[in-house]
Image (cartoon, rainbow, N blue to C red):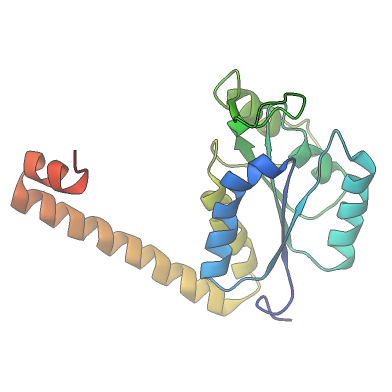
Length: 191
């Protein structure tokens, strides 16, 4: 089995507006050449589709599901209740209220804390791993770590990724020392 030919990760979101955040998980998986399948599955508006998706994911051999949702954020927990596949929940702060005629995006009344708590406080027996608010990149990286248990070349790629991050910080630190804080900040974050 190859992770680059057949989707082993499912990325689902409760609404099309969540795609602005969830694309970051896809970007990470794409960088590592891990095939994924992406869909909109609403826990509230399409409950039978949610159940069908869980069966689909199991039947197709998915190893991980990344589920993003805002507001009450029931999607990650509900998909976890229908499958034994590990679920990574992404709490989303920005969402589009479908009942409104406005195309403008709205912010969660609690700055994403509502979503974070909804996903992280699953009852005993139905766990969901939760990343930080809008941290879909971390969800993608966590999915890669799960897959790396099965694929040695992904382990190697993840180690290289960590080394690259390490060297990047050292390079920035050297530049900061050389320029001084004021010049470094002005250069890095041009006013």
